[in-house]
Image (tube, rainbow, N blue to C red; front, top):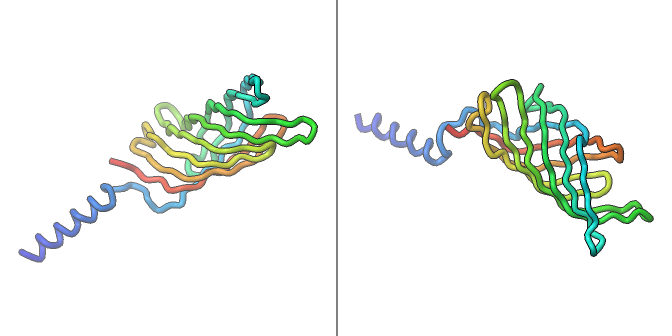
Length: 161
């Protein structure tokens, strides 16, 4: 009987130490978004810096295969048309949707130059088939001057009960 109680205590400690039961925690998990900019607004400040807001949408592959995304992004940066050099920082909120009621909410922040983006992200919550989903990681991607892009996200996801 003492062995059974000890085994139950060890099992309970393992659940507490790992943050509860997890439906998925094998990581690393990856997904890619591919899309285009739907709206872009910018304003040049008195010091020459540019602030902007963009809205983008497209397709998701990988962990969220078959889903669509839409994000709103804000940023500030500089651009030199003579040298075609640009750099800046950005942050945004993305919703990944895979059918009615199945959504994952993602926040990201990073940096960009004229053709590349990189940074970190966090999955804040999910609904439907993504209920309880959490995670975080990094992203890298490429853009083109025609407002198209492809961004690869890599990290560790888990399901919180």
